[in-house]
Amino acid sequence: MAKVVIIGCGGVGTVVAHKCAQHPEVFTEIVIASRTRSKCDAVAKSIGKPNVSTDTVDADHVDQIVALLERHKPELVINVALPYQDLTIMEACLQCGVNYLDTANYEPKDVAHFEYSWQWAYRERFEQAGLTAILGCGFDPGVSGVFTAYAAKHWFSEMETLDIVDCNAGDHGKAFATNFNPEINIREITQNGRYWQEGEWVVTKPLEFHKTLTYPNIGPRESYLLYHEELESLVQNFPTIKRARFWMTFGQEYLTHLRVIQNIGMARIDEVEYNGTKIVPLQFLKAVLPNPQDLGENYHGETSIGCRISGKGKEGQPLTYYIYNNCSHEAAYKETGMQAVSYTTGVPAMVGAMMFLTGKWNLKGVRNVEEFDPDPFLAALAENGLPWHEVVDGDLEVL
Ligand code: NDP
Image (cartoon, rainbow, N blue to C red; front, side):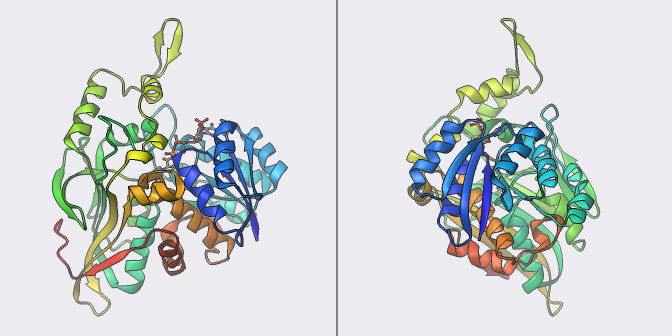
């Protein structure tokens, strides 16, 4: 049906490529392109299908992406490189008349700050070109937004509180490692927290608020309030929400390492001079930390990510609702060679691409996932390795 170019071949890109290759009826041709071609070749080899090929691109440069898209003429680009490349890839897509999908919003390299304004600024241009850009189609952001849209469609007349809860109860046996790109991950969690309350953002110190939340099939885990990008679009698209927060679990060992990394200056993102060479400490740290793609083999346990929502049901009655997925690291590794954090991001990216290419998600312009119909997406998500569950009128415990 359509040709896709996947840009980026890390943990997430590997899963996206594997999952797209499972659906040749939708993804007739798949090109995996990244900065390091050998990684793309290795993934293409492990998939072993004739419709999967590879290419090279440095996606920091619009002209290189344009040349890539002109060579392959895809219908859609699935951007699973880093958030720094979002704008250059969107720009190239506009120049070449190609649709776009990503899993993380734009972040400038020199400031640890993310928000949608930079990508939303492309709305008019995508709309005028008759193209679609789907933003944030991983798990969170991604499925978290689709879960919320599903709750609004089927359960609530008015949603009042939303808590997105993200637990990784897996154990990879390393003293310290991040589950996705360490640079992006550490930048995200060392920032101030932020949540939405009565029409405005309340700022907290990094990891200042925490509480013990209980996750299905896992049990109690200490969970920390973070700012997460989907909160920005969800409170706009569902304006009845009075309070929206995001929680993520961290173990004590992880937090101790993180504190030390910060205290000794290794989380810095400005350049320092070392032996006549300029280096960014956090980028150097990435080079010595375990590669998230190599964690899969010995990873045990599960992730659990979901939305806990309260408000008024369709008949105006008080309602609580919890919708979530649990994903096993072992099962994800067995299928794709990657752990569950890459898996839970890559599967929704493939499903979002499938929704677009099969015409089920057909709005033009720059869109967040919750603007589309959640039903076909969630049906396909369950069929493709991420089944989800609902608890109606249960104890949300974070109320
Ligand atoms: P990795 O670091 O494992 O992989 C990133 C890939 O992008 C690598 O192949 C890298 O190439 C490539 N890349 C980096 N810079 C460029 C460039 N300038 N041009 C071309 N390719 C480039 O990251 P992950 O796979 O863990 O994460 C990928 C994306 O997914 C990130 O944006 C991350 O924020 C997002 N994510 C989203 C989640 C969600 O739920 N929404 C959860 C987890 C991640 P090279 O190997 O040469 O460095």
